[in-house]
Image 1 (cartoon, one colour):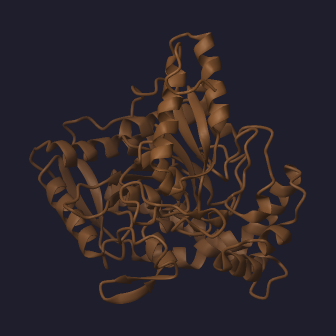
Image 2: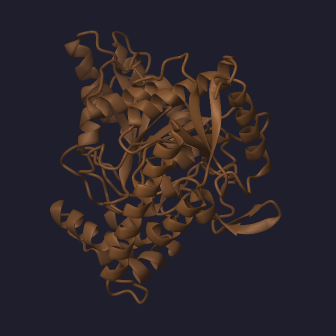
Length: 464
C-alpha cells in the first residue's frame, strides 16, 4: 500500500488513505472487525493506474455479507475461520460502481440483536456520541458511516437492523422491499425477512447506492431518488393512531411532534391510519419466521460454502448467552422450545395477511407513506442496558422496544427509509417512512421531499 503522504498518490489512493486516517482517529468506536488497509490500498492503486476519471469511494460492509478474501465471521466465534472466495452480488454491484471495500464491520452476533454489544469483538460505539451504543444489528456499519470513515455502508435487516442503527447514529438508511436486493452471499437468519440494505450520510447518496444495486441509474453523487411526486402535489402522509407513535421517550416525542407540526404547514396532509392490528400480526408471525427458517437456511448456507461446521456447532460456540439460548432452544429442531413446521406455516399465512392489510391501508387511504419515529428511544450508554432499559419511568426489555416500530413492515416485506430528524441537544432521532411493497424508488423520492421540508424550511399551505 502507498503510505499516506507518498509522492505520486492518485485520487483513489488519496480516498483510501483519508479513510484509514479517519478510522485510526475513531478506532475507539470499534466499528470494524477486519480493517483491510493492505487490500484497499492495493485496489486503489490498481484503479489509479487504470485511470479513466471514475470516482472511487470507500465502502464498509457488515461482517455477514461476503467480501472475497476477507473473513466473514457474522460476529460469532464459530465462523471466525470462514473466508469466502467471492463477493456477494450486492458487494460486486457496488464495486462495479466505484466502491473500494475498506473492511468488514462489527455487528450484533449472528445479527440477532439491536445493540451491537458483541462479546467476542467488543461493543460498537455510536458515531454521533461514542459513549452511547450504536444500535444493531448493523451497528458497525452505521458507526463507520456516521463518523465519516467511509462514504457509505452495507448492513443487513431482518426486523430493523438497518433502520435502528441508522436512526440512533443520525444517518440515512434503506430497508428495500423483500427480494429486491440479491441475498446470495449473506449469512442468513430468515430467508423471508432478511435483506441487505445501504446506509449513507445523505439521501442522494443512499438513493445512488440503491440505484447501483438494482441497476436503476448510474452516477454516485448525482443518482436520482426515484419517480418524484410533482413538487406542487400535496403529499398524503399516514399518521398512525396506535402503537407506533405511543410510549415515546421525551427527546423522541419532541422531535416527532415538531416534525408533525412542520409537515402539517407544508405541502402535505396528514391522514390518520389504524396500525394496531399490524403490530398484533407481527407478534404472531415475526419471530416464528426467524426461528422456523433459521436451521434450514443456515444448514444450506454452511454446506453451500463448505464452511466445515454444522449449524449446531456454530450455535454452541456463540459467545452471547442470549443468542445461544434463543437459537439453541427455539431455532434448532433438537431444542426444547422448537415449535416445528406447523408454527412456521402459520407464520407464513399470517405474513400474507399482513401484506394484504398493508396493501389495503395504502389503497384505501391513498397515502404516499406511513410515518413514525424509527425507534421510540434514543441510544443508551455503551455497555449498559443490554437486556432492559428505562422508558418513561418503567423498565422495559431492550430488544422488543427497539424493534417495535420497524418489525411489522419488515415482516411484511415492505420498504422503509430512515431519515434523521432535527434535534435540539439530544442524541439522534430517526423518522421512519414505510411505503408500498415494490415502491422503493417512489418512497426515496417522498423521503427527499420530506427531508427538504424538515431541513430547509420549504413552506406552503397544506391542501386536502
